[in-house]
Image (cartoon, rainbow, N blue to C red):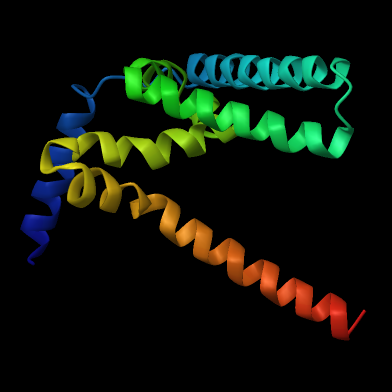
Length: 149
């Protein structure tokens, strides 16, 4: 590239800056904080309710996680969680319900290809690497704990 081309590109980039919409960074941070906090508060409410039913704490954690993942997947299937995610950004993506959304969303996109090839295969587009990583990490930690510690 010549110097003239570089100057031309820089001038064009500066020209485009006037037309780009400004990001509402502070608004996005506040909304993400409150929506993420609301999702976590709902999870805490579910945990508290489960514990009032006499279920031990460790089992209540597992049951709460399962309920929250199911809720995230169910709301994604209804199309509600995508609206929450577009409004709240990372506030909806970080809690465990966001993981459920990231697993179900690809499957929902490919449901017209059929249950096995579309939904069944695409569901693990995101979940597959996460499950493999978690399984390998758990195996390594178990071996280290068994033989080293």
